[in-house]
Image (cartoon, rainbow, N blue to C red; front, side, top):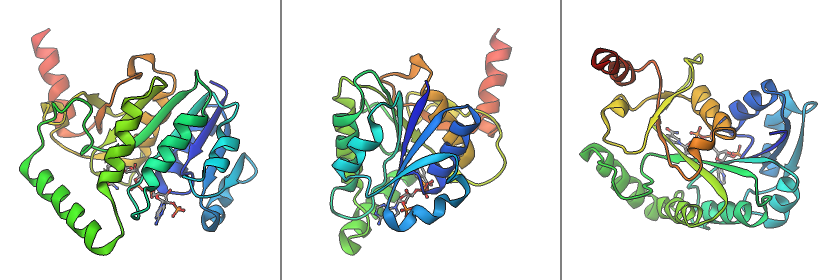
Length: 233
Ligand SMILES: NC(=O)c1ccc[n+]([C@@H]2O[C@H](COP(=O)([O-])OP(=O)(O)OC[C@H]3O[C@@H](n4cnc5c(N)ncnc54)[C@H](OP(=O)(O)O)[C@@H]3O)[C@@H](O)[C@H]2O)c1
């Protein structure tokens, strides 16, 4: 892995991913909305920025050409199919052998086997309703984006984030295939570590064609899982 593109580079997750990529010695390309280029001030000497909406196909084509990996922040903002347009452009223009890693939340399901708590289902219904009412978000667009990724032969991973918090790194999050697995019960990850998981996934073959649901490695549910494993050994 030498050259990596971060699509959605100006957000909190994007900026953490850029920092991790630079720390790991990758050449970094970034795509972010024109109005947000200023947020990249801290990195401007160390990376190349392609300004543009992340669903702008011409911008994505230029940005991902020659990249060994593409890290994409999938956001459900607006009602103009932003997530789907972003994912489709990356799928269409990334190099055939590139590792593609996408971010989303636990609400996305790969195989329908996730067991969501009632509170999460209520929250999702509320966001769908609010999205239709205000036009600000479109959860179904993120669902469609992921459906297209799951159907793609590209070497993808969709990293499903828990609730997020700021704070110092606690280390690489742990993951499981299904929401409802006891290891995930704490439902909290540091954003900096979510970004670390995304970047680590670029070089983790075990994660190709997986949609890991992640949780912080120091959360009570993750620690309890480790303790149970040690007892059973
Ligand atoms: N927040 C959570 O609790 C949570 C939980 C689980 C998973 N996730 C996942 O984590 C990822 C990013 O989450 P985050 O909370 O850390 O956010 P973030 O990194 O701050 O990212 C927000 C992104 O959305 C873009 N954006 C904002 N408004 C927009 C608009 N109207 N149209 C198009 N793009 C817009 C931002 O671009 P600009 O810089 O140009 O504004 C930025 O790239 C997403 O994939 C999300 O599904 C989040």
